[in-house]
Each structure stands twice: as C-alpha cells, then as structure tokens.
Image 1 (cartoon, helix red, strand yellow):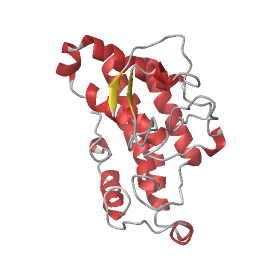
Image 2 (cartoon, one colour; image 1 turned 180 degrees about the horizontal axis):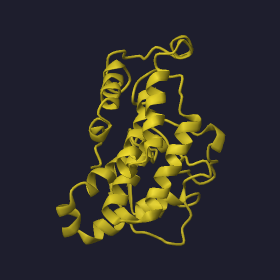
Image 3 (cartoon, helix red, strand yellow; image 1 turned 90 degrees about the horizontal axis):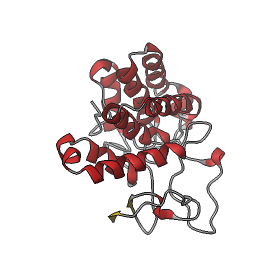
Length: 226
C-alpha cells in the first residue's frame, strides 16, 4: 500500500514512521529498499518530469523522502532495510544487507536519479559512498544474480561510471565480473533457487556481462536512470 502522509519535521524515524510524507508498506512492514520498498517507487515517480512538474506538492514530498533517506545513510554508506516500529531496535550496522533488494546497491539508483532531477550535490556524494561500501562488502555468497548477487552489486559501479565518467568505477565493475568466474566464487557461492531467472539467476548475470562490454550504455534491467 502506497500512501501520502502529513509530514512532521520534528518526528523521529525511530519513534514515528509518518516521518516520510510518502510511504509503501509490504506485509505490514515499511521497507525502504529497491525490491519491494519505497526507493524504487520514488524513482519511478521522478522519472516522469511532466507528472511531477504538474504536481508540485508531490514533487516536494518526493524530495523530502529522498532527503530523509539520505539522512539515514550509515557511516559505511549503507541504508536500513525498513523503518523501525516503536520500541523495536534497528538491525546493527554490521548486519545490514548489502544487496540490490535491500540496502545501498538498490537505493543508489534513486539517489542517482534524484541527483539528475534536483541537482543536489549531496545526492551524488551519497551515491559515491554507496559505491565504496559495495567495493568493500559487495562480494556476496548468494550467487551471481542481480537481486542479491555479484552482478547486481557490480551494476552499482557501472551506474557510477556513467554518472561521473571516473574509470575507477569501471575498473571495479570489471573486477566484480571477473570474480564470478573464479574458483573461490564457484565453490563458495549458493545455487540460486531460480537458476535461469532475471533477478536471481543467470539471465541477470548475462545482462551484466554484456553491459561490461558497452559500459557507456549499461543499465540495471528496468532501472536506467538516464
């Protein structure tokens, strides 16, 4: 359920979930990530400039949501998976997920689009922190896919390369692609539940490997911010 709410600037996300003027709930949880959370919905909304220019209040609400999200970015560059209910504790930062579906590797696409739309330099800074986090912690054991695997995290670097032109990010993307073929990964990673699917399996991995050959045109499937 996606709802519009009144915004209280003095509210705390730890005490009052209505701190976000727009929110999406799934199984009674307010997820923030890309797979079934707030950030990709916001990205879709700001991808239609004619819509948000005609709906100024909606545009302001979207930007407020992005600003609140950026305020939740951890020192390492990650994001919590969901808002916290009153009386509950947030997951420790060291245990936060570094996946496209939950965490910085998915939120980065919203931040990149918001940077292009709103021209806020702080959004780009948040994107770069996401990239550094993925470089440090993004070699996952859950398989080669794009939802929660090596290819999905590698796409962060292709995004940052297109966004900045810095070849450091392209080099990182190449290294993630190479890692998929190492004995360490083949022996140590899990077999996806849906081996040939787009998000969990080899179809998404194939998209990533192809995009490594044309990085100037690369984009995470269905999330091209350009």
